[in-house]
Image 1 (cartoon, rainbow, N blue to C red):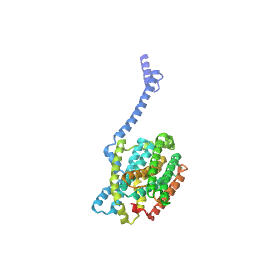
Image 2 (image 1 turned 60 degrees about the vertical axis):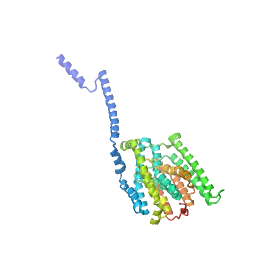
Image 3 (image 1 turned 60 degrees about the horizontal axis):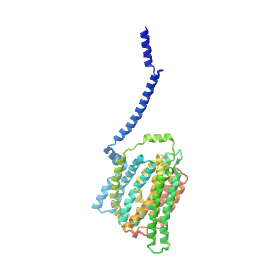
Length: 432
């Protein structure tokens, strides 16, 4: 009986989940630790396996097949074919626009994938930079052909499109999706960008005023010299802005804090579809494709203006920037709908700041090296349009909040600008 009773007591001790003995407590604690570590290791391994499953054909599918806008990709080769077969500039221009549109939009998608690895501030800067790659490539091709007015008007149109159309659509869509709350963004960063845009307006205004008041010391030379000097100053200012943004005052550009629950949900839902090196490789491929089509597009602009009976100013200021800004347009709206307005502002306003403070002065310097007399005299009509646009956007951004009505106001302002350039006669078209 004693042996049986002892055996029963031992069995009872083994079945008891919480043993009173010190060794039992240590064993259970050790088991729980192992379980916790293994669960974390398994979650880490699942992420690694998830990354390893991204194969090249999956990368091709994500970039070239998945998006519906890729249905427009065949129009690019078709435009090149028509250029050599028919020489009908209107069709070549139209199909080139259609062919560049998906490439520009996919460029925005790639930079969005890179933002997963770089963070929101650098991600917004990358999106603005590669989003403006289309404008830069088109501008260099046009500058090489001596089409200075096309360069000036297309870059001006890119600024107007980003500040009015892209930002307006982003605010409108974000306000509709999140209509039960007020969306916030970093007001300090918006104020700094507004100041840089006003500085760019000043750099464009003085050469125009100098020209139209006929107060140059050396007629035809002082205006060009002032433009080149101001361009170098603007490039220094933009380089200082980048250092200030990325190194000196990083906390100024930190995103507005959101609810932790929303952040956790977004982190669970979102994951990069491409690896970092795949995204970099696709950036090179898409930029090369845009470069090829841009050459055919620029060659067909003047012929398309005659065949379509449409002013070159309207084509340069309205049509070209809409295509070139397809990347910013798609990504900015997407981030606004996800309530990430800091990235939206970094894309839309950051892109406008980059064009006005970097791309335009850069084109002046490149034209200087090419022997082309490109200056900062964008004519009075264009300069006044830019000045009023910067003022309107600066006033709407000063509160640090957005809603769908602000977006609607910006879209309607862009329609007024588009109508104005449709009836505007550019007296300087002979310079192209």
